[in-house]
Image (cartoon, rainbow, N blue to C red; front, side):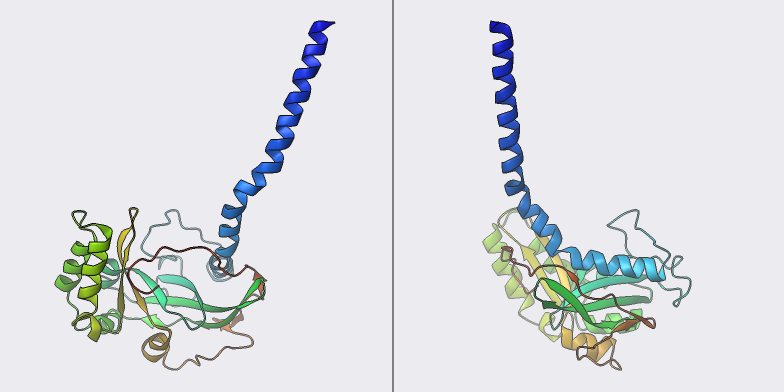
Amino acid sequence: MKAPAAAIHCFRRLVLALALFLAVTPAFTRPEEERREVQRHGYVFEKWVRDTFFGGYIQPDYTQKWDIPKEINKNHGGLPCNMKAIKYGTPVDMGDALRQFHVDEPFILIIAFWQQEGDKKRIVNIVAPTVTPKLYRSLWEPVTLEDLKRLDAVVKDRKLGYREARAAAQKIKSAPPFTRAIITVNPKIDEKSQRRLQCSLSFRNVFKHLAPQADPKPQEMPQLFGVSAPGPFLSPPRNLERPTAGGKP
């Protein structure tokens, strides 16, 4: 009888351990689940755009140059497209500065601006300007490729501690020619491993230079290519700590 009793005892301990594991696991996974939920607005908008206008196209490579390659855009100008979902009134992150400086073909920049309404986000404005190389380059003037490379080298100089690199990069971006450009350069430097040079365009300059005919005010029913945007969707306010990265978001 000892063997069955021992087996029962072991079984009970196994059940108890499993119950404890199931009870504790959600507490550990919740932050990542919340992170995905908070970031969901970009995914929801991009999926709507892909499904509605581009046949459900999915990027085979997340790092590819365009969200929608020109060969996929058969009905809306035949140009490549990039998509952004941005909080209303805040700068639009354009991505890697050097890559953006080298853009040499026209593209459509699809931007959805959203506002928080409780635990939901609602798209309140959409613009989709065609950006020509000439127009895009004018936003950089008088910054040159050499200027960008010099700043990029400082940002990525591993001989400098992150505080030194951040201070040096900030000093460069806070002086001409960068202060005279319409595009803002954003050094992203932290105490871990992040060393990037991004760029952004202010909300005001998006409408002033890229979409001067568009109304920047929130809209009741914003549209893209004549189709109304999806309604409010679940996406709680962002409440995650973000490391200071030397430059505005």
